[in-house]
Length: 196
Image (tube, rainbow, N blue to C red):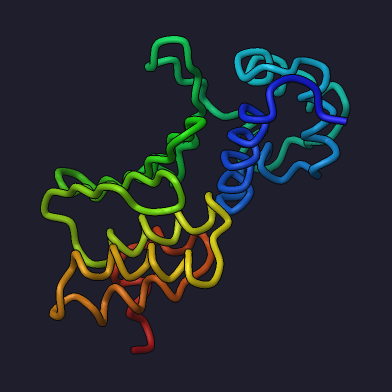
């Protein structure tokens, strides 16, 4: 049985889902392991604080060639009286997912270029960008779909909303990138176009 706030635990599950997609060590924990740590310290600040040591003490993670990997999300306290979790993705943290109880914000950055979408109440409620390429919007869409575990009509509405931002001239590039399902979607354009 899950202790503490169901809302906070739901927020944690969203962050864990995208961390698993990005192959972060803590995102690869079994759901029972995630729940075990939550039940020991059923609050977002407590969870973030205890998770790395608990995972290592239990032997759930082994050091690999690149070290221990990402063992916890980042705690956000930017809203008065409310905590959120941040999951940074990519070797240079090109993508960032901020999860709050009522909102998910996904941002992709590459130098001065960025694309950002805000998801609330089952839909994209806002998007912003600067010099964003169609592939950047596709990256934001895919990450949002994974984080929110969207399927069917809900998934398609997010994809269509962000595809419409790129316009007709960017549809082909957007569609090539949105078809990628794993974190390889963050790879550069040259890698994706090999074999085209």
